[in-house]
Length: 190
Picture (tube, rainbow, N blue to C red):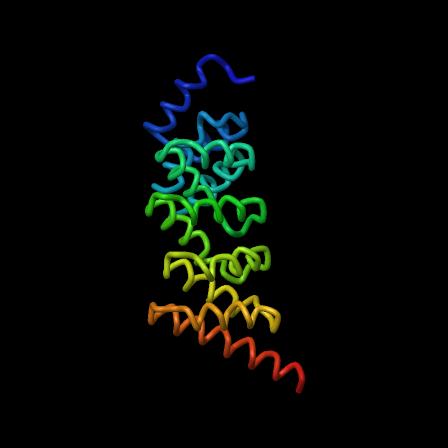
């Protein structure tokens, strides 16, 4: 149970963040600190304290908290999107949800969370779905991911996406993915 001055401590942290305060707030598992922790994580993405802020956010960003915030208002969805990482399998459904969000900024934040983890096996099914996404930037990332993770069973979906693609950059990446998977399959057959 949080203490009555929890809101005051969250405000004090927001005014003057520190790794120790982030850890203390996160330890209370109260999502009222979520936005302040995410803001600090975004403010300190580089440097020696970056990991401490990311860990504090991850402590609070449970699936229940992410579900609540991803179904909230625009500010809540943007905040939650910043907390997502494709590195964590339980975040993948929320990334998929964010890629369908009506707000371009939420979608952009979710695309960034995919970019650095496009070789994570837990994303395979998301990439298969996203290769048909309305946004060519999402399709491009999906093609890249499938090129890294995909196998021969993914070739029909990739070929269909390639046949339908109008965006030149995305077409190039889809063609690369098809070629890479075909080459790998040929190498394995030897």
